[in-house]
Image 1 (cartoon, rainbow, N blue to C red):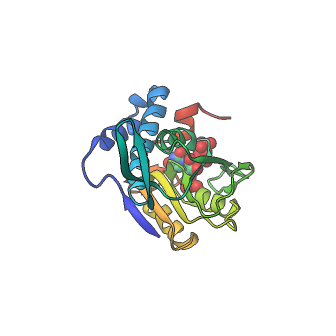
Image 2: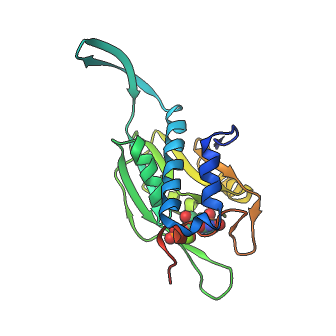
Length: 217
Ligand SMILES: O=P(O)(O)OC[C@H]1O[C@H](OP(=O)(O)OP(=O)(O)O)[C@H](O)[C@@H]1O
Ligand SMILES: O=c1cc[nH]c(=O)[nH]1
Ligand SMILES: [Mg+2]
């Protein structure tokens, strides 16, 4: 797996990352969603630099410009719920992309911290020959992303698979390394310290889905 850390250099990205983590700013759920969306835009731009491009000619009112455009179609596929705001950011830049949505949640059978990931809903186009970008802001244990990747119809072979996350743990990255195809790309905006005993990211930001859309039962 090729890992791309995009906040190694100081940039406005750090400002958005600081705001989504801040317990006081988090009270404003619209700002939380907007910041995740803005991070998605930055990630989309960085990722776009690594795609393949083809030559095109553009007719302007005054002549022809020889330039380039992305060679193969992009499919954006997000994991519900928390992926939605990040998805919007990617969609703002990859505006011709096809879109897919998959659900995944932690199902606790007892009142302890053990859980299983349930993937129930999916609606996605064919990935054949396309650049698949799988989107989820949080890479904690990595189990949601791996469960979703196994559920997607990857027999329709994408040209490339990119996984885009905002905050990752070393444990989650290790789990992906062991469970996703070797030629996958992982894009990480921020690498955090570890998982806590409830499998939440520390320092992280809390529950991204709840912060964006409200506490669920
Ligand atoms: O790496 P993992 O240990 O699998 O955890 C990460 C998952 O947790 C969050 O979703 P959550 O299950 O909270 O659902 P939600 O988006 O509906 O809140 C997040 O968006 C990931 O999908
Ligand atoms: O820290 C975490 C872990 C899983 N899901 C989240 O939203 N946050
Ligand atoms: Mg959640």
